[in-house]
Every structure is written in structure tokens, then in C-alpha cells.
Length: 252
Image (cartoon, rainbow, N blue to C red; front, side):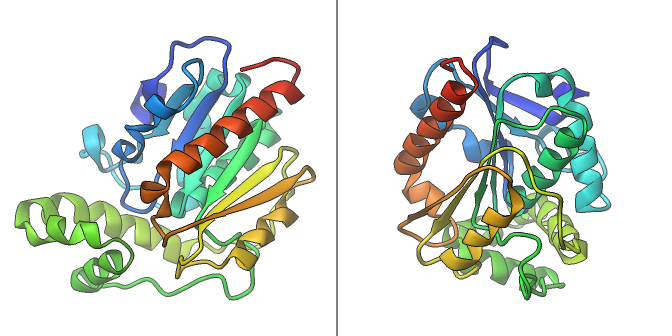
């Protein structure tokens, strides 16, 4: 089950920290394929494989974001006993947060939760209406990521990627959010200074979802700042991983 849900971009199963990455709506694990090169060599880099894409094209899409989080928490299994840092961007931030809550209930919370480009679930007015028709979905995606226009211009590629985006938008539409129990681990927030989806002030709302520390880093760029600012983001994540390793008494 773990291999069905988790792609090891680099991981020898050793005692070092594992960075578990959760992609945006419609996202694939390839969004993180370049990350191992810029992170410390003893850090495992793993990415969650959402159903209905990549080598899981035949698997049914999740029926709810909470159900998706249940399945991922189950799939992590004994990996959750390792020192793990979660990173989730956009929809992935909500999924990572929900998985972190489930692992905390089981006594194995992540060492840190890193949330990017996503309002916290309890922020009033934090929900937006997601488009319903295929053309509206395409226009919405391109509004945030112009690089996807070429993908949607190709009928075959459009047919390949659009079902997953549509399914994820439905998950986000149905996700009620609301108050959640506080996490025991630190939370680190990241956002683009020009992100139309979330303001830095809204990102600071994640501070209320942890009993530990919170810190926000604002980087240049829009919703997909993490592409143009990948080097700065990964340098900061390397510092986070080193920090949680020292706190737990071992250097990752």
C-alpha cells in the first residue's frame, strides 16, 4: 500500500529526516522531481501519489479531502515512526495538515508541518467558489499558472490532466474546513508576495493551529512562486530540517 501512495524520489530508508511532499490540485509527484538535488544528501525526499494520475490512472479519485487524508495516513504506516517533515502547497497544504492531525492522534506527529500558498481551514471567508465547467477550470488554472496553457492547447494532454484537476476542485469545494485541534509540532508558512489566492496576513493564521512555534517566509512571485524561487525555498526547508533534527537531539 505504501508504494502505491508514496514515491521515493530519494530515500535509502536510513535514520535521517524524510521530507514528505504534497502537491497542489491536479498536481503530480513530478512537481518535486528536482528537489533531491538541492536538499542535503541524507534527507529522504518522498512525494504523495494522489489517485487518478501518473501510475494510478486507473484508481478512483478520492471522494473527500478527509478521506484522502485517511488513506495517506494509513499508507505512511511505519514511515510515520521516522522523523518526517511535511510540505504541502495549495491544496496539498490542507491535505498535509489533515494527515498531520491523524498521525498526531496515533502518537506519531510529524516533526514539522510546512504549508504553502493556502489559507488555514478556520479563516473566515477563506473559501472560494471553484469553477464547474471544463473551460472554466482551464481558465482558472491558467490564471495562476500560464505555463499550463500549452498543455491545455494539446487535446491529448488536456484529456490526460483535466480529470484530476476537476476531481481535486470538487474536493476543495466540499472541504468544510473549520476549527481543528492544535498540532504539537512547529508550523512553517510560505507564500508568494503576489499570490492572489492568499495574503501573508491570512497565512499568519496558521499560527493558531499549533501549540509550538510558527514562522512565515514571504518570497517573490505569485501562487507558483516555488518554481522561480525554488533555490530559496529549498535552502529554507534545509534549515527547517536541520532545526527539527537538533531539537530532537540528532543531526539529520
